Amino acid sequence: MNDKHSHASEQHHSTSSTNDRVFNQGADRLRAPERVERLEIERVVSLSLEGEKIHSVLDIGTGSGLFAEAFHQRKLKVAGIDSNQSMVDAAKEFLPDSTIQVAPAEALPFNDNSFDLTFFGVVFHEVDNYQKAIKEAYRVSLIRTSILEWDYKEENFGPPLAHRLRPEFLKSLAEEAGYKNFQSIKLNSLVLYLLDK
Image (cartoon, rainbow, N blue to C red; front, side, top):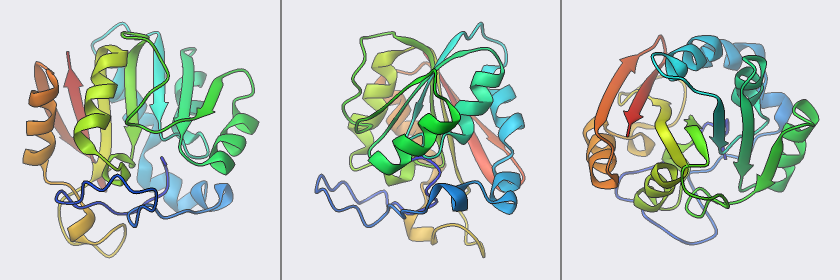
């Protein structure tokens, strides 16, 4: 899931197992230097933790574990899920002491309020059902959900505009799920949305 730069459309709420918005790349490709630079991992992690006492994080759609690894380096308790077994296997190589397992974003295998923070790193646009995924993130997070996504504009990198998410759409999803505060922060190439409970 996470780190698989791909595609989503606000109108696409398919629950089929074939997801045309998911672009499966190998773990090596996910960790290519130019891609890592575009993700601004350290800045995203710092902003996701800012102003709150965060001790645990669930990386939803962890991919090769790039963000999970960065959270782990901050001495946080980290867990991750991904719908792709090969990505889970790759992430476990980088985070052998963390719980990383196969699971969909729409059915997280954790109790309510299990993590201070839930995090989606350029993957929310790939989920099969936006409402279910954000409600699940809300359910298992105690404090905040961070969603790193592509800016809603045509660019010569990343997915086409039709597969990007409008900020207003994300804000309405967040409000429906019960989040009290919605903030968007423009980065160099991406946008970070902070959803506080």
